[in-house]
Each structure stands twice: as C-alpha cells, then as structure tokens.
Image 1: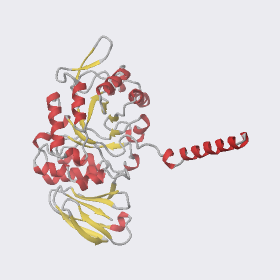
Image 2: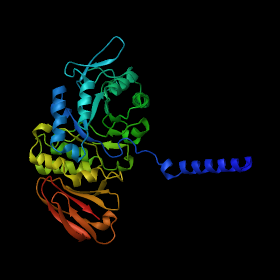
Image 3: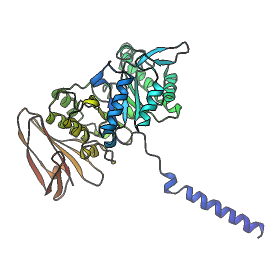
Length: 395
C-alpha cells in the first residue's frame, strides 16, 4: 500500500469516528438534576426542632417498609436545628443530636434513598443556628463529604440584612449574589446536590430562580395543616406554569397529608392540586404512624404519575366560578390531568366542556381517585363534596 492510499484510509477512518461521535447519541445531553419534581420527606412540618439521628433513621426505615420508596419517594431531608458549632478553621459540625452525619448518610443511601440538609445564606438559620454566610465553599465541601444529596437554602437572617441594604434593587442584588455563591460552591464539589431555594416568593423568584441554579424555589410563605391555608397557597400558583420546566420547579411548600389538621377529602384535594402543579412532593408527616388512608393518598400511583409526568409541564387554572375551579395539566402523549375543585363547605356540581381544555372530539376519561373509567366524553359534570376534588385523566 502506498503512502497516499494509507493516508486516505486513515482520514476516512478518522472521519467515520468523528461522524459517529457527533451523532444523536453523542449530542444527547444527560437529563438535568431534578428532571421531575423531587419526591421525599422533610422533617419540619411534623417534628420541627424535635429531630435527631434516630428519628431520621426511623423515617428512612418507614419510607422503605411502607412502599413510599417504591412509589417514587427518595429524599430524606433534615430541616433546621441540626447545626452545631464551627471549629477554628470555620468548618461546620453537627450538634449532639447528629453524632455522625456521614454514617447517617451511609445508612440512608444503603436503603436506596438520598439525604438532604438545610442551611441559610445568612449568618443564622430561622431557628438561630449557624448559617452559611461567608462559609459557602466550606459548607458545600462538608455536605459533599458527608454524602448529602439535597440542600434547602432558607433566606432567614439574610432577609434582615436585605431590609437595610438601601432599596429593593440593592436588596435583590444581595440575594442573587448569595444564592449564586452557594450554587457555584455546590457545583465545584462535583457531587449532584439538588438546590432548593426557600425564600417565600420574594422578588418573584419564579422569574430568576433557574438563573441562580435553583432546581426548585418556594413561591409562597409557609404552609400549615389547615384547608384554607393549603388552598390559598395552591390556588395562588395560577399564572406561574410558564416558569416551571424539567430541572426547575415552582415549590408551593411541603405536603401536610397525614398530620391531622384536614380530613381525607381535603388531603386528596391537597395531593391532587400539588400533582397538577408539578410541585415537589415532600411528605411532612410521621412516616412511622400512617393511617391506611394517609398511605393510600401518598402512594396513589396514578396521582404520582401526573406529578412526575416526563413532559415536565406545570398545570394552571382553566376556569374559576365562585367556589368552583377547574385546573388542567398537559401530559406526555397529549392527555391532560384535570382537577375539579369545590372550595365551598357543601357539595356542588362542577363541570367542564372539553373544548375548554383544547380537546377536539370525545376523549377517554378516567376518575383517578375512584379508579374508574368513564368512557369517551366531550364534557363532564359531577357532584364534588365540600372541600373536595374529582381528579380526571382526559385523553
């Protein structure tokens, strides 16, 4: 073989390799962190400051034994009050309630789960413990070394500083810088850590949360285990759907299902609305003491599938008439999840004409909570109990 022929063959081979490497498989980007809304559990709603290593382990055990893990719940998130003191080098240590955070993470990981933690961009957390201001790089490295998979980063005392910053613009610049600093620190660890901004919807966070690396951002103040507050928060998400996408989610706060302040119909409303909103599903109850009804609500696979739909679209309001509201969420393949909500104290008929959903012609309709196929319809009218919901899959 002469030199020219050999060179041509080498070039052809190289070109073929480059073509293969530049094909669709090579160009396909890896899925983003939090490609669907995070699912798991958080300690605050039920345990508040009464949280410790033993309780976290018990919740992890219960998440597996109850079937929650198999239903998609993965994160075991420790909220405020775990923090101890910083040593002479500025490294944060857990307090006596958490004697070995690395061992706790290993325990949680061994169960096929992930561990989350909490801090603040200010000098103090909401409960007055050490925040991360000025220690972002150190804290991110510490979290990564422990094996942390999720960070809830709560505005808290930084908000006090923002109020004296000299105007809204300067306050917002301070906030952006704080969240960007921690995002860069987390990224530098090389560990995939879900970054959840908890700042209560200040400065319309849904407009800029993704730009500072947020995988989720709180859009509201704190939820409580009361129907009125839950619905105020949930229905208050109207108009925010365009800001949610895979890897970046509006967060109307954690679930209260099973904490005892609402009845079964109200908790099904709560779960249905959060699923339509493509909200993070973070249970906030004691997983070791769930009633069958609580477990059935939290593990309903058809409801979870709506929340976790791979299209990654948040739902929004379709109609509102007095106490009656209809919300819909687009699903992959062209179907829609439709929630018929009755916020009155007494039963009411709620109806929807499918053209209002963008549906042309009859569509298969299924009542999710009743687990009943209703046939092909062009409209639906149903009696909804007070504070209740009928959740449909249409199409």
